[in-house]
Amino acid sequence: MVRKLGVLCTHPIQYYAPLFRHLASDPSLDTTVYYCRRPTSKEQGEGFGVSFDWDVDLTSGYKHVWLENQVRSSDLLDFYGYDTPEITDIIAKERFDAFLVFGWHTRSMWQAMRACWKIGTPLLVRGDSHLRVPISRFKRLAKEISHRYFIPRFSACLAVGRWSEEYFAYYGARRIVRSPHFVDNDWFAGESLKAKSLRSGFRESFGIPEEATVFLFAGKFEEKKRPMDLLWALKRLIEGGVSRMEMRLLMVGDGILKPSCEQFAKTHDLPAAFTGFLNQTAMPMAYAASDVLVLPSDGRETWGLVVNEAMACGLPAVASDKAGCGPDLVKEGETGFIFPCGDTEALAGKMDRLTRGSLAGTMGRNCSQRIADYSVERAACGILDAVRWCENGGKRRASNGA
Image 1 (cartoon, helix red, strand yellow):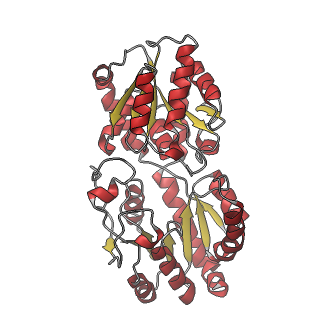
Image 2: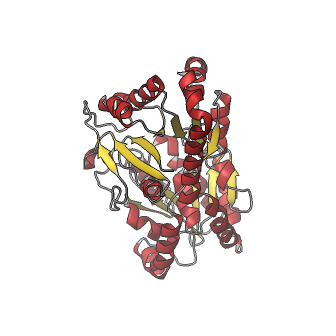
Image 3: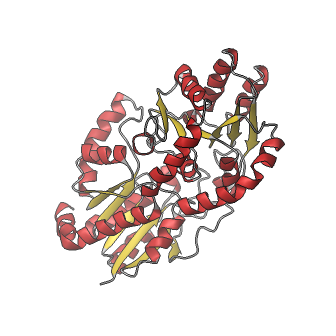
């Protein structure tokens, strides 16, 4: 039996394209992805500090439809920047066996959600929210009321990891299915392996000695990612006697905090190289040239897919205890270390340990095994399981709950 699955996504996202292709290849599913908008190069670059288009194909290999967005906002995170009322008629006409939304953070998502609830179409949601995001008491109280109302109305909630599973359970989800966060592990591993032969040349271009342990920061230079914490940790280590030849930072990305980070590194004469923004196909080279990834982010980092990428390339991770991926991917002493968010002394201690002996290399080999469970196959399997569950009873309960 072929089941009809509709999917609503804000815009093409590099991490979702492999999932949609995998779903399209499943003979038991007839999947159509509906996109709310086509971002311009400028809109795509919001927060990255540079206008760009992704240099990988995001829309081939699966059936997709572009919806007509009724508004134009340059902010891809704006709730009101997505208004696609036609999705209501599409859901009524197509009569999907299940419909999947990626969160509830835009007007378009709510248009689809209400349409499904109105006619009893089983509704799935996949998300990475967790309970450790810092919010005011008023917002927390508002969520207690709103989320306990609408989250139980989803036929199934697809959790990307432990903390998101905890989140859905807290707000009363009727059924939770694991659909883990992933990247294209095979692609990153393969491209990183090919880039290894260029490792020395890449390091040399940024003045990085071959013998140095390189700690990588990769992402937007913005407040929630706390890039300055890594620089402060390096400053502590250098002042404590660590050789500049022994340890280096590779800071990949751009954003509002990059100038202040560069100035800090210059003022304190820190051995840190700033590459600027690197597109998707260039990232494996950065991983190949590095030894350890650092994710200093606060609780607004609901996951941190750069950790998936790094581990697929054989790098361990040092992550803050507020980053959503930590409980799933970072096993203390085996695939990396966890440190208290904002504690640069603790971060420096973890970094210091990883410069000694072969610990980083041993952990890197463990990471390749760990990340295998966080694959596109596992993510798609979770979605298919949820669709099947809807077919076997979820539809009736979804209709009753509307």
